[in-house]
Amino acid sequence: MAMHTLQRGLRKLGQLVVRAASSAEEAADAGPPGVEVPLWNWRREALGTCTLPGDIFNVPVRRDILQRVVRWQLAKRRQGTHKTKGRGEVRGGGRKPFPQKGQGRARQGTIRAPQMRGGGVVFGPVVRSHAHGLQKKVRRLGLKCALSAKASEGRLHLLDTLALEAGKTKLLDKNLDTLLADAPRRSVLFVDSSKVGADGGEGLRLAASNLPWVDVLPAEGANVYSILQRDQLVLSRAALDALVARLHSPVRPR
Amino acid sequence: MEYVTLNTIADNPGATHSIKRVGRGIGSGLGKTSGRGHKGQKARSGRSPRLGFEGGQTPLRQLAPRRGFHNPNRIRWTPVNLGRLQEWVDAGRLDTGRVLTMRDLRDNGLVHRKVPHGVKLLAKGKEHFSAPLQLEVSQVSAAAREAVEAAGGRVTTVYYNELGLRALLRPEWTAAA
Image (tube, rainbow over all chains, first blue to last red; front, top):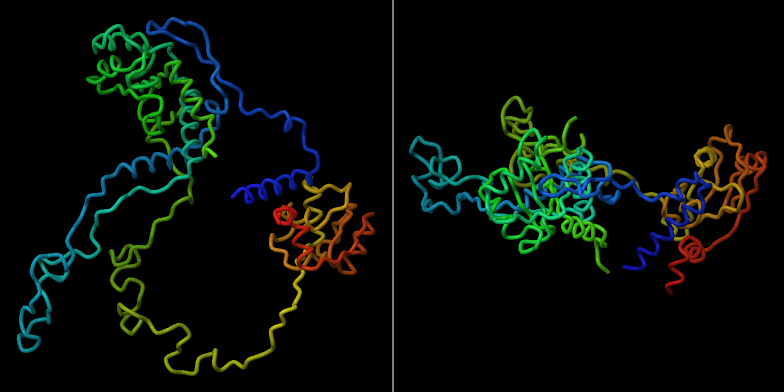
């Protein structure tokens, strides 16, 4: 396995060596620039700014990759419990209904053949899984594209903490009026650090449970479908750190 | 601006294609006979006659005479033409300052990745060839050698047997052993 990578790496090195010297900026290329985002609290007061890493929040948005990731997500969640009976499974139909010759009718062998009323279905649905594979690197790129899309549209907001004074829906509703004052409609995904974290956790989930246009996810649950489903994306500091750490770790741990 | 939402994402055109579904109506072009024509053995479900069968007529395979023999020592040189070299130099993908071996030519994509015996330099495109290159290849045609030297370069022919060539093209393979 390592040999294959070594060969590939050396081949690439060979290409670089043979190529004539290109422009100087290639040597100093450090990825896309970071994105400046204000840090708010629930009352939408600016507590400072944060620079989001450019290689996660400022990548070119590949809509085709987003579509593939969403398709993969929706396919793998399908239950696949659909079934019809074929001619071998329909009850009955073992006997020849009438003799071969002499009736003046078309010859038939069984009352459950597909051309008969009440007969079996040809190639009908069977119970199966609809999940298919998608390269891990593509899934990761999809997440980066989704985050970059939200950031470039100005629909990504950073809060110091998503914890509420009490887990009350009324409270969250009022807070959202301030927070999303200039949003055309209310549709938001909150991402905190975990289900029992101090920056959201139980209280946030209780408060949001009866608001149909609010979703809450822990940091490891951040996925392309959920991010694109809702208009606004609100992250807490801790969630942002966890997400960045996850996206900077190697795709395939060696 | 068009926001990126679930209803505004799509795969690139040409990324997917719809499959052929036979027997689904006149408009599809594949209704009724489903692309099989009318009657005959090929229209039936189950098997068709084996490949090469011509209904009993002596098939072409049997009619045609056998010819020749197989030479296990046959050598096939992988060609590279001057026109292609010139394109690479114009794109800045070739270093004219040093001696280029067959390994450089293969790594750069100038020749096919499989090089069983060596590379031969040929002269297609010599009218536009003007780069001073220093090349080390297995064989070179007379016209190609003339053209390279007229442009100020040099061609050296070198001999590699199969094992030696593999060692040249893939040094990491020999290092492993």
